[in-house]
View 1 (cartoon, rainbow, N blue to C red):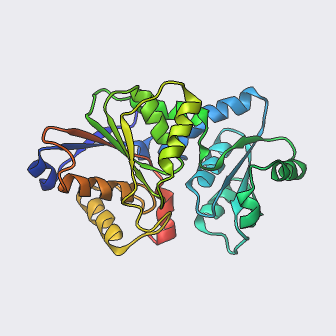
View 2: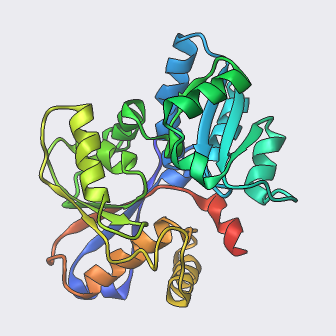
Length: 292
């Protein structure tokens, strides 16, 4: 079923003359909610088409992607291998404990090796260790993932002036860009420190289709120090938001994006009459790493 869209009402929005809606992608799948199911859907189909029974992917020890691949792989009859950045730490955290409980084989690469994970040498080592497998990239982003994310837009029954979401590897926003086909205005909030994501999204878009769309941008002002970094004002904002609207956010992705959206509305970035859709990309299992 399509994930629901609901309006968020705030005095701030009324004062500024805007309407804000949220597409609840966090409710779209029991095992891999949010953009993870969108990214995995067509990769699972391709793995089956190629005759693979094993999925191998990469991620950090708290990765939403590792968590999702483990759960979805088990549900769809795949064996799974998670190649984890860094050294083994015992006992396993909640993310890796869940992955292991789903039957995922956990394999560690030190940070130097992990940086070279796409090299021929590392690929050969993994093939020697595990045999034949279907590779899903870190974060799940590839052309099949982008195809899945376009369906977020095809489910919508209404058009909006602005579409906002968190950005990590860039796959989901590429799907939104391609799904809208040049209509509307798309604003991604980077969860990472630095301004490199714009170039990465441009690259992903060009690899997916030749058409260039100019109706999107990445805001780099609300990363709160970098990936998985938080500050007290962010945690307070997410807690207050959850209390008012009974919608959970995570501090790594959606919390930062929603904080940024509120700040831009407060600062007059949007004009009166604008209708803004915030796309909730899931990632709620990451809350456990912050004791939430």
